[in-house]
Length: 100
Image (cartoon, rainbow, N blue to C red; front, side, top):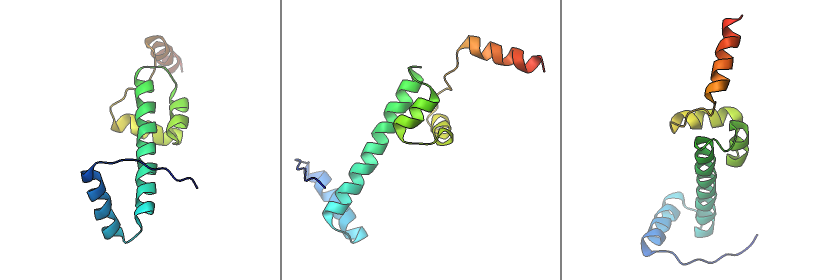
C-alpha cells in the first residue's frame, strides 16, 4: 500500500470524522472507501459521457466503468443516456424484424 497526503477543506474533514464515528472504523479505512467510491463514480460518469457522445460502444463503456454489459444498460437508463444506435442501424433492425 502507498501513502498519499492531500490537503482537504475543514468541512470535508468534519464529514470524514462523522463517518469514522458512525462506522467505528479508523480514518484511513474511511478515506480509502471514499476514494474507491469516488473513482467508481468518475469512471461511470466518463463512460456515460462518451456513450452519449457516441464515441464508444456500450460494451466498451461497461469496461471503462468496471460494470457488466447489463449493469451498464441499467446505468444508461437511469441517467437518461440514449442507446447509441444510428438511424441507419435502427432502420436495418426494423427491416430485419419486418422480414421475419
